[in-house]
Length: 186
Length: 130
Image 1 (cartoon, rainbow over the protein chains, first blue to last red):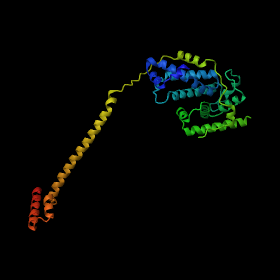
Image 2 (image 1 turned 120 degrees about the vertical axis):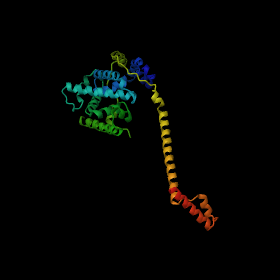
Image 3 (image 1 turned 135 degrees about the vertical axis):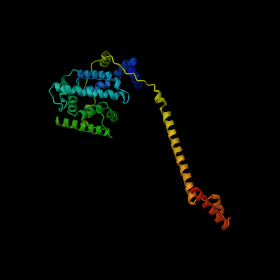
Image 4 (image 1 turned 90 degrees about the vertical axis):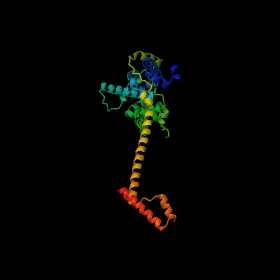
């Protein structure tokens, strides 16, 4: 992406706070973060069309509340927080539509994965997604961020508002649960 | 902390098997820009106000004024105490002129001189009390 090489976050944040430059600057933010936010959302909601809707809502929410972003935290942290909240809100709405209790896990999201035209994984990959979907929300987030994105615990801590020690423990428990899932579904 | 390893995860790898339409992100970025509504941005004035500029100097001046006042009060009370102490010492006959004291101590005065000196000190004290 051409804009990636010239992306200067400090300058972009500065331009976001001026009426005449904000829109253009936000365009650069979209170009820079759409991919990383999409994959974070996609791993939560699984379906491509759903991920597309949530990503759209994430940027709309960020744009309409841009005045609330004062640069105290990193822009990426702020955007990831919005994306995660939007993903969780979306999953809860979908649960309500499907008469699924909010306390139940998110494994219903993986049920249509096999027939999804935007998925070409094998059985093992489907099983891994099923295992991840059975994890509690926070463990799921931590596992996805760490395993797929190699995100630092310090960055995760900023986004999720949890200590690094607790995040390490969450990741450890998530792996154990995934291994147990594979043993039970062998 | 040692990176957690899992044989199962190692075998599966990090590709989740998700795909996206061709040019998805380019299309999304363009579409997203069209969807953004007009918003009113509250301009942040980065130029510091006059108060912010002069504040450190005012704080410093106030600090020096405070120190000066404390020293003034301390000196004032110290002078009062010294004057009162001196009056009190003279009144009770404790006060002895340092030069006279040294002269007496060095043995430069006779018994008569010493007695005359002490009488004069007592007389001074009595006059002060009156």
